[in-house]
View 1: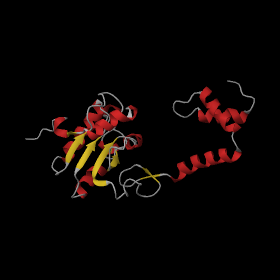
View 2: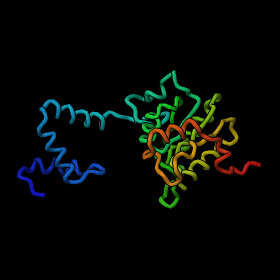
View 3: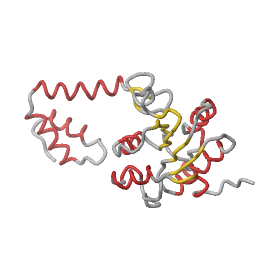
View 4: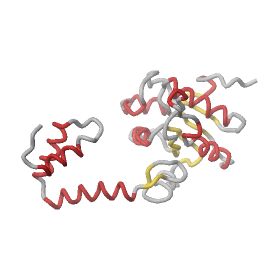
Length: 209
């Protein structure tokens, strides 16, 4: 792709670094911005820069936040004693869009994958267990992890860590197909899985005597 402007070429190269964006798509975006008012482009650039510099992670659930605690964790209208355990921030957004869940979240930052060198210490599992122990009124952990072998392994590991606590551990119903990724599920399927979640004992054998 040949450009008559080095500035355009540089901008296209930067946009093309985004996931799923090729050179042609990047060029369309750059040319679109070129046609916009300068104030609109400045606002766009400022929003991106501000996001990168100012967004932080909630110290309690590890979701993105503007302050020390995210807006979900400080919402007194939500059930603070019900935690939905998810892999990524994108999963929080996906579940929130269903409007079927009114508890809080805990973002692990990934799932257990020994082959990839990802163990419990690389994830936010210890902070989840600490939350479960610290809240005497904790009611439920909703395991909303992608139904893959790695996801199941993570569910099993966490369930074993809290099995001595008087906490109900559930998993989203199998409306989400095994081997699928949670973020790609349609909202109706995901909403059904959240509302029809199952006790963890129906899902994995924790080896209780």
